[in-house]
Length: 338
Image (tube, rainbow, N blue to C red):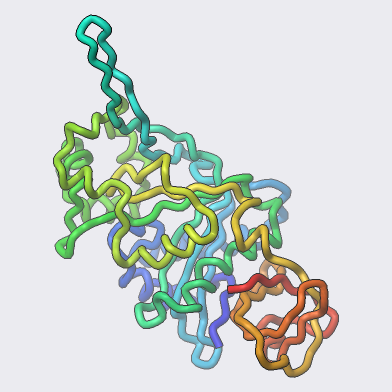
């Protein structure tokens, strides 16, 4: 059985194994033991803290095979993007160039560096082992953390964002980076993203141009890459689009990948999830798959279960499922259909 739970320091070696296979561009999951140790420590402190509003907390989850103890995925949430430093994006804008005398009226697509999304909660660090991509376990790894948000709304902002890894080729070259960022830094895309993972994205962002970038002046390959999704990020992009995230307004400043945005209360797994009391027994046949979590904090657990559940009624969990969630008869769980 695969179970989502908060990461622990004992997971460090396994987490680094996951990070080593994550795509270039997932700077929130660097293949560096010291940074990952800090990430897990910050997460443990956040889960232990008493919180009444979103601040500098970060929450890091792992997906564990309970039969072997092996980790097969991870994901995270930053309570406030840019809490200690601005969170930069490129905002899509339209400039109008008009000449009455020449009877010319042009609308020009431009990119403006901004930190509009600073303060929003940020979904980060998504990775799942390749054999599990595209199935129900990807849903658990991505949406399970949204059930945590639904269970503890005071810890998160009213809006959420996520940066999706943009297009780069097999050699690790990004057309968007080559056309924009590389003009300001003497390094290729892979080196820039690695540096961001080890240091900070902000210090590179602050050296990017503050004036608008006219999109028609960029090479065709760079324009085509804007808003495009890396093949290995397609699964999380699709999941979050089904959750109600939107793509129109912002892109990543390095690879041009889409930056998704949604009101927290309108996200499907949050808006449609319900709580139900637990009965221990044998679930009836003819059910459907649900994401189920125990709603706890430091002992948070989430999994996928086939349930024959009617909203408004108690939910019957098998002994194995109840044990994996750490709940007993009469306890409350939160669930949403896969």
